[in-house]
Length: 166
Image (tube, rainbow, N blue to C red):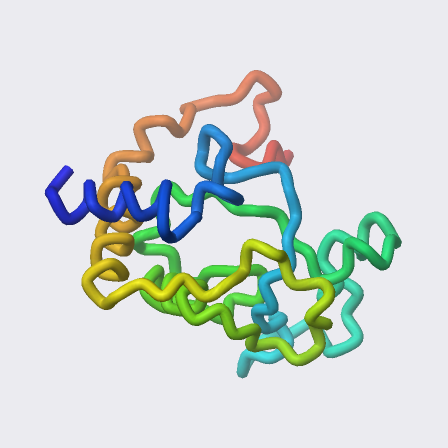
């Protein structure tokens, strides 16, 4: 890791507080939070969704509980460098946009009540240098350009990988 990536790692586990949610082995968690990002229907050209789509309610679409509304699972952070979109609604297209979003902590989805926003979602007040360092850590230190080496040639079921489709 470069010195900048090391600084980004330190920020991840201190000032930026990313570790508070991204704490599992894959820097994810089996927890659900609302951070107020836009829903999929709000993007141009998206089909098969609408303002009334129950999937916009996040975990509440599954549990039926009001307390779970607008909460989505904490995703893993590995190999996001080339991800074409981020967040459940695809409203961010780069890690930099996501970092800036968390740094400012201003919800972009007016449908999400303030009472549902995660208490961890607070302005981080990072400098541009700190944002650059965190982006370097997430983009380069958590990136494996040879990830395909883990794709199995076959799976025990004989079905397709990764979804076990016939």
